[in-house]
Length: 92
Image 1: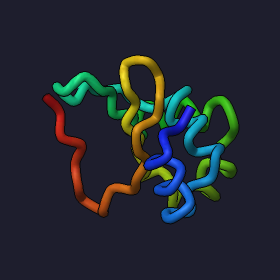
Image 2: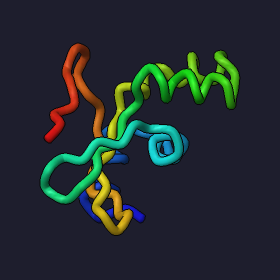
Image 3: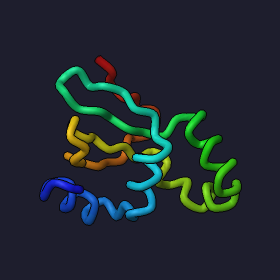
Image 4: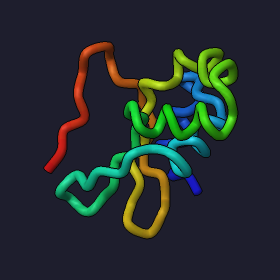
């Protein structure tokens, strides 16, 4: 489930629903220190997706592998975005 804010951001940033699902299923979860979880793709999660789907589908979606989402403790997606190249996820 998405908040209204997250729905707007998904449309603005052109992030397909498949990426949201992959983030939830394969993304590394890190707690932000404020009661939410940040999910993002790291090398391990990308390898898991390549094993599950093959390298070609992952390569085709590579522009979205910098995406992340913020999820509340009750599972609601608060926002979705794309990290800038060379940026890091801030961890608590």
